[in-house]
Length: 307
Image (cartoon, rainbow, N blue to C red; front, side, top):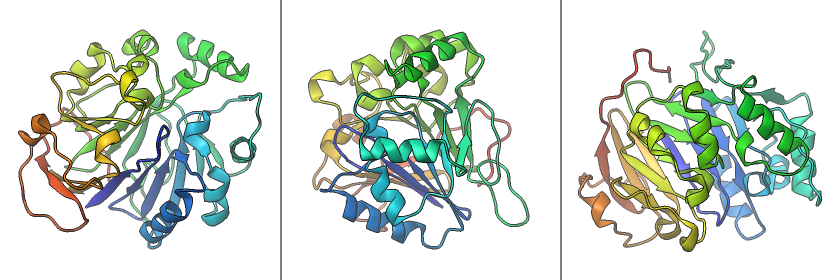
């Protein structure tokens, strides 16, 4: 049994995975004086029994590493997973300075397509793997090379985003796309391995500019797309797909239990008629705000990652 939580932090992103093995993963952060104490307290509690904690920063945008100095001071980051870059900023905030220190320091592990590491996706006699795989970037891909050049020039950071997939063995899978833009995703379709994924977090906080192309959705065939907290007027709502909109739902917790996913939301009374048709009520009480349960559809993979 694993738990994945998506925090409602406004326009930014922040997630954790409490793995079924001796692993704990934080993906991106956007902490502020308003939310830092509560979120860090929860992260400490949830990770307390885990032997390995890693932080994955999908790309060097402020709403994906905001307040990282607060997190690092409270829970020292010993494993910093990042796409190698030399991003510059006109405004070098305390968060960006700490990001650079971590990015360029001896705690950094540079991620790219197909990379492996104990205990990210390799296990040994000490502990199992986390079930995480990195699907992107392909460092030799021409589109990525151009995106990295724009990033290092301080022009644009979105298309250096990593694509991260987590798979619970014999259970659900989830995917993070950072802030990839639609045109970029279309350009790399033939260079990224996509397969059926239970829950996909929409790119660029659900914005139209990060609409997941139909060519990707046909391969991913998600049961749920989570739409982030971009302003409503900028959102793409993925007609024809089951969605949870974090602007309304608040914090979203996915309890992965075998071939089922129990869903909890922090907004009391949250309802979604279209999604409700796909969920059952199993009366779960592990967390507050139980919304319902989905059964994981068969995934087209021969060698599921271990967890």
